[in-house]
Image (tube, rainbow, N blue to C red):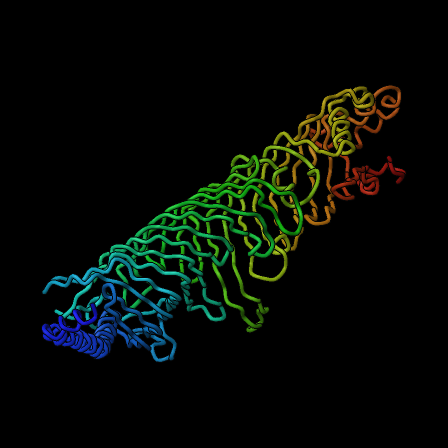
Length: 553
């Protein structure tokens, strides 16, 4: 058998020569392809850098770029950096505007002259985009779009760009304010074209303030080269598990859905929020807060203008409009005190269908001091600072409370007693058989440093009107009011019985105008233990003196 095989190869020696020649050609071809790829890589790398420089009007660097023809065209690059355009402030600062750790893509080898090579997806890892603040721009080319480089030997089309572990930094031009940083876990761009049409996107990112996860999809672009903040954007979002404790003084977990349109820097946002456990972090009970809003948002610094917000807090409805903006820290100068910087809130609030107990529960724990229907208009300001929100909250407005009842039975019983005696029904007051009296309160008000000041409180119950002025401490519940009570009935009618008959001579001393009796009163103590009493010191001063100089009291 071995001799037969030997004779075969001797007779057909040309087969060996052919096989050797083919093998040598394959080896040579492999070497030539390897050399061609090795020589092509610098060309392709330079071509890629040139295209990016012309697109972004900026200096571009790429540390490495490699290609392979095993099972199609494979390409991989590392260390891509794109600097700001030359006419952009900060272009010479040494910091790139775009940094990319690595990228890769694959394309089938179906090249046809004049036809682009289609890449189904480009994978990006570690993208870092730093968007500069708003600034005046001159456009020497008359457009913020990209420049076209003309015809190229090789052209590519891209189906999608898939990015993992990206970061978007929005710089601000406000001194002393840190930029907003969005950590993007996943981003997919489709419709990627060289003709500057918008790209569709799907993204999952972490919002910095309040901290939570945003799922967004929509359209972005074209990229405005000279001022990236002017790049158009529109779409919808879902915001989940936003922790309001990121803001000092409030707490709760917020969720929100909505739509947005505009530019990266100036967006119009319409949406709604739901916070089942909204509360002040310094105390008070949690209430369910729902809002619907229309807002203008500066994405570079988070400044927001509300126009307006419709909100439901517990059982109360209110509207608000105004601004929530950031102010930089500033030292003392020109006689003005220093301030630490932070968010400055200035709103106009209108409570058209409110319950006073909702707002009292929000500010304090436990049973509220009183209940009733509330209408109110007020300015609301929370200047920046490190103190808790209730201590920085400033209010200035007017309110009307109707159908008021006190939750303290001691205080409510005294109000009931006052009403019955004011109507000349002392027996019902003594027997405590009257139903709980509903009263009305109305006043201007101011709030500062955690203290509510009521300068002209008018408290009305059937048979009596009480005019008071004083203060109420939100945190400690301290009550300090003084004023006068005007009753329809006279002193003798208020006391009744034989004692009332004895007091009949004093009726004219306490009578004033249309009121049957005018008595100075005080309300003190605390929210948990209020005290209601007649101010006998002031009462003696109001009683007319007899000709002999003795007091009528």
